[in-house]
Length: 365
Image (cartoon, rainbow, N blue to C red; front, side):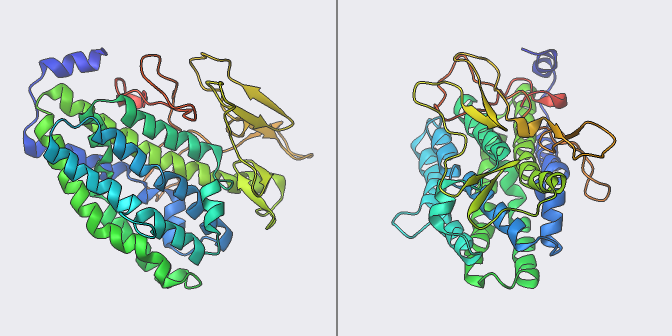
């Protein structure tokens, strides 16, 4: 137990109003609506290639929402709570083929010119997005119910973001069929309902200062996950600028700082290997079985600058970065310190795990 948590156990619990205010303050200051990529999206400054890249990368997150909700569902101890949370899974998976939020996101992709099988295959998903999503799923897998539920409180800010996004698409991206915006329209009501229900659960379950602090820290972690996801999407532009290229050909798909042929699987995990092998330029690095730390793709490190530049390397922008002035300045860690938990089950394809114990003050998660 950290010293901060030890102090929290001795301190008096916040009042309901103060606790609620602290939770809302997290999303007000750290929600990804302030990320530079989202600001460019909403001002109409994204190219069609950038928008398609975001749609494809975000689908990797969307498809894992029912997975994390199933993990939370298994932690709830009363039938009425499980019934309410089950609705979240149905909202995204639907109750029949052709229904649900995942289907609506696939239609958004099609409206933007992407094939749904390409979205399912994930060849356009940067490694940093995979890392962020895996970290969030494992956080929900390994954390107590209170913290897993608290992480979902980003829903408190989702309805306003959906309204902003709809207006931006209708004004700036008219080449996208308006029918493809159904996901955003549906989430306005669903997000408001889900946020209110989750907030009520957190306020009821967090009865001590320690529990309240853990809930706030879990919500901070979730905001960092969403921020890091956009960092990874945005970083592709930095790599393209260094390489002197502008995106990829139609026959290729963007994957972080490199391209792979369409249809190729990125970041696969061979059977029996407990840490993934990640392509790294001309070679590959593999984290040895049982290793505690994730071996990071080289897109998170440094790459050579073109001939004639002053310095030897140019770091690619995946990981900590500072938001430009006017965008709500803050630094967003890239699921810092994510590692495989030694005391809990971890899926074979999970590369990031989040520990809820030392979240505050720039620590993990």
